[in-house]
Image (cartoon, rainbow, N blue to C red; front, side, top):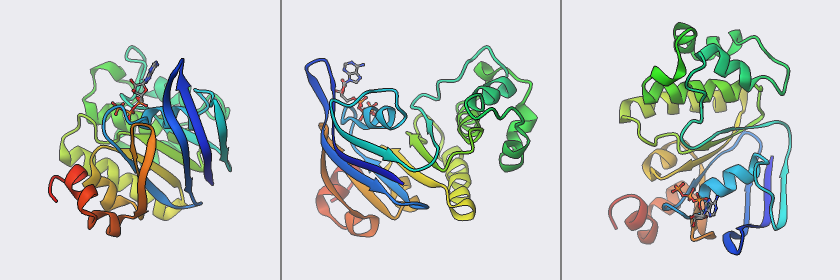
Length: 217
Ligand code: ATP
């Protein structure tokens, strides 16, 4: 579903992704972990077609949507208009299916996105991504800047979409606990290179991974 082979992405002479190979199967929920500057957003933006690889390949079966780091909403537009922008490529303008999945957005529809809380804004970014009726979703830092309860609520929505609709998810996270709770497998990226990968249960027992990402050896 998402198939990345030997991907190299550079900014000028600086290599941000160095021969990265990663796959997410149809209906799978997979995590990508790594510290600041590891190249996670570079991978997300390359998958979304916003960056051009220097070499390697990216193959995506079906439609992919991105929830970008920092939400990237239009703060002066209403929630409804932000959602509509998510549907422009697919020609879908009617948000009712998204309101059904995320009822809070219907209540917020007329509000300016810029005045909402961080959690509400992340929900708008989530809804905007769903407007394109994606087969696969890349989530760049779901939990960033959000209170744990708010993150848990969004994570539950994500898990439900994965379970009920078979939505394929690549979850990019600094919060490894959240990622391990939600996902079956994970990749760990450091300085542009994949350093380890595997089942979350196995990675959580790996002292190097636990020490660096779970706050204990
Ligand atoms: P964070 O969680 O802090 O966003 P990240 O893992 O998403 O980190 P990237 O944002 O992909 O990492 O950055 C990877 C590397 O590429 C870093 O060294 C960063 O400084 C560099 N980089 C990112 N964007 C650019 C850019 N537009 N121009 C030049 N270098 C960049």
